[in-house]
Amino acid sequence: MTTITPGPGNHGPARPSLRDEEGAPGTLTAVPHADQSPNPPKDTPVVTPGAPRPTQVRPVPLAELAGQLGIPAPQGAEAAATGITHDSRAVRPGDVYAALPGARFHGADFAAQAAGLGAVAVLTDPAGAERAAATGLPVLVVDDPRGHMGALAAAVYGDPGADLLQIGITGTSGKTTTAYLIEGGLRALAGPTGLIGTVESRIGDEALKSERTTPEATDLQALFAVMRERGVRSVAMEVSSHALRLGRVDGCVFDVAVFNNLSPEHMEFHSGMEDYFAAKAELFTKERSRLGVVNLDDEYGRRLARGESEVPVVTFSAEGREDADWRAVDVEIGPFDSTFTVLGPEGRSVTARAPLAGPFNVANALAAIVALVAAGADPQAAADGVAAVPGVPGRLERVDAGQPYLAVVDYAHKTDAVESVLRALREVGTGRVHAVLGCGGDRDTTKRAPMGRALARLADTAVLTSDNPRSEDPLAILATMLSGAVEVPPAERGTVLLLEDRAAAIAAAVARAEPGDTVLVLGKGHEQGQDVAGVVRPFDDRRVLREAIEAERARSSTKHRNDQG
Ligand SMILES: CC(=O)N[C@H]1[C@@H](OP(=O)(O)OP(=O)(O)OC[C@H]2O[C@@H](n3ccc(=O)[nH]c3=O)[C@H](O)[C@@H]2O)O[C@H](CO)[C@@H](O)[C@@H]1O[C@H](C)C(=O)N[C@@H](C)C(=O)N[C@H](CCC(=O)O)C(=O)O
Ligand SMILES: Nc1ncnc2c1ncn2[C@@H]1O[C@H](COP(=O)(O)OP(=O)(O)OP(=O)(O)O)[C@@H](O)[C@H]1O
Image (cartoon, rainbow, N blue to C red; front, side, top):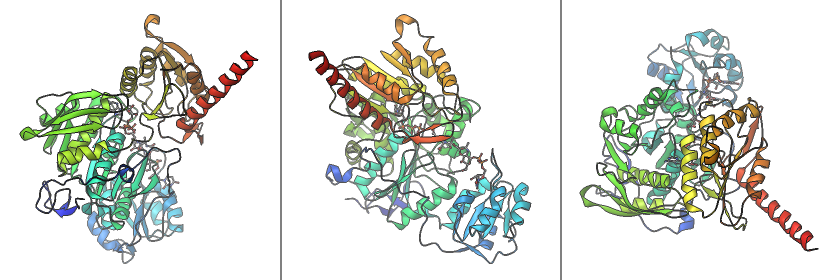
């Protein structure tokens, strides 16, 4: 196995690298498939609750932190910090509490709680200063505390990111999948790895529940510190546009930053596509990364490659574009995976496999391979590592209860993803496609009608149902989805069913399935709960789908017996 050595690093100061000591690309030693499985899809993921913290931290004097902020040391600056958090409820003795202004609250309202839990100081803005001072704790006041929080967290934990090879992935679709594929490759190449993303965070073999795609900077730096403590040397992490805009990755410099694609999403947060792209493009500034890996098949990827990235970029094309540095050719799409050849600079050619169905997963796998190569891996070793990943939870995850048709759960919850996955599975199955989909409440409303339209056009049975309605009326969400579905001319659309209850919707799709058909449950993937009016009750599409298949089998065998009797 190639060891990660604090290598020369192509693009910056000494950092762990996938190259060997002479600087040659790392090679992959065959590892038995099971050992290599970072995240075999499973019904009940291993979850350790609570934000992890490192066990050994050098106390950092407040005076030192004030110096870093460029402000005079506050009274009581002889105290020292051993942690930092932005959430009053998560304060541990010795923490700095970052009291941030937010859309709903000002964190200063919770300063007393933080003090009660043992905070040693409060970082806040002028608006929060008085409330913070009322606690009697030293107060560090800056105009933009969120903007300083990442660097301060890195300082408190001793800049743990500097000891990790960091690969960040951004884009509208495919971040989670690509992160798992990269982590699988890293694990095969270089032992204990870290993963940070929507489904979970992993520190070596330990899985932790994720609240966000990208954690707040205080939690992220603590996570890096725990990873460093446990011997992790490399990390693959998803970087959302929220993270880039809200400073969650301040304090990180990614060795490799990957751009997958961009399509309309999060329009409740961004003012339009240009603003959304500008947020993503922040990952490709010199402050944030050293090298970009960019998808040339995407128009926004081409913009980055053609001058809008501040850092050098390596390009890839899953569509075989000859102007890409690395391109996939001879792509064979199979029912559950795809094989292809990767052609690279200097006549390099690699045999590759995307271990998940669908043409878009060729793009994700190619992105992962090129990212690993950009980090210093041997290209064939990188491709072999990616090929060996056994699956990604809730991403085209098959549910097999012995039924004579294909049943799949997928996290598609944006129009382009719904279209991609339906097109991909139409090619795989021989029969009809019965698809279930809802749209989340309190999130981007502009995608609801297009998603209803896509489902009605591309599925033989389109079952419109609830996702996480949150505080919204589920029927109102369904009405908007339906308004899109009815835009499809009757001759071009499948049967459209409306069932507010998600379990009933899944059962309805299953009841229509015949041998050779495909049942597809979209939108919630790996999620374990359904949020209705703020109450989250357990709901796992994979489990509900399996139970529906079993119930349908029992129902039809009873009917068969009754018919015979
Ligand atoms: C738009 C957004 O991302 N907002 C985040 C932001 O909220 P905010 O600034 O408005 O904060 P607020 O709720 O008013 O609270 C103000 C401050 O008081 C603190 N507080 C609040 C209550 C309390 O009891 N104690 C306490 O200390 C909060 O931690 C916060 O620092 O800071 C909060 C604290 O960290 C986050 O919880 C909140 O995430 C919200 C809930 C969220 O859902 N974000 C999603 C949309 C998100 O970030 N998604 C992305 C993208 C996923 C994708 O790609 O699809 C992600 O990376 O997950
Ligand atoms: N490269 C891609 N292009 C288009 N659709 C994709 C791509 N990769 C995955 N998808 C679809 O999008 C869904 C979500 O994929 P994934 O979780 O990997 O992306 P993500 O960017 O992490 O999404 P999110 O930001 O919502 O967590 C998948 O279940 C699949 O249907």
